[in-house]
Length: 110
Image (cartoon, rainbow, N blue to C red; front, side, top):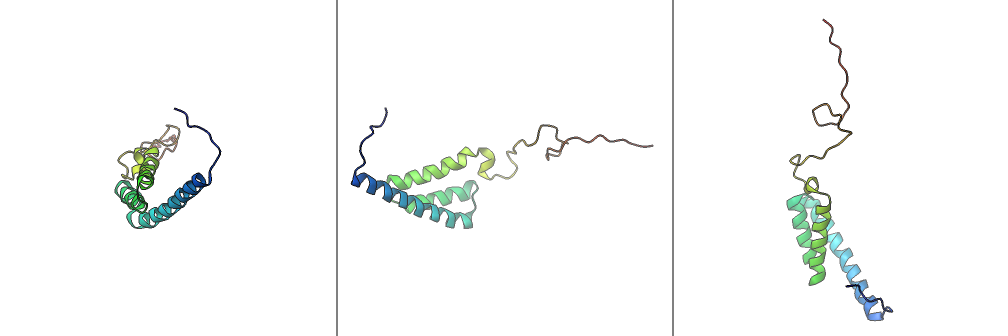
């Protein structure tokens, strides 16, 4: 269902401006907490929960959902689980130790 497009009202502008300010405050709170907890799976969840609790109601819940969604869009490696889910790098010509460097030919002299 498409949203109706209407002329902006003073009340609507005020409500959205307050939501914008709440987002700024929650973002600052998220950054402060994540400096202590980190931004991995557990630290990111704690930071999102604290940031969401700074704002009451549905807006706070949406802030927490948005923070979780942001982590999820980075994929499993974005969860900060170390090298449990390594990303593939390079052009596939790795030398076997995971650094993605091309294989070098070796000559062995006897």
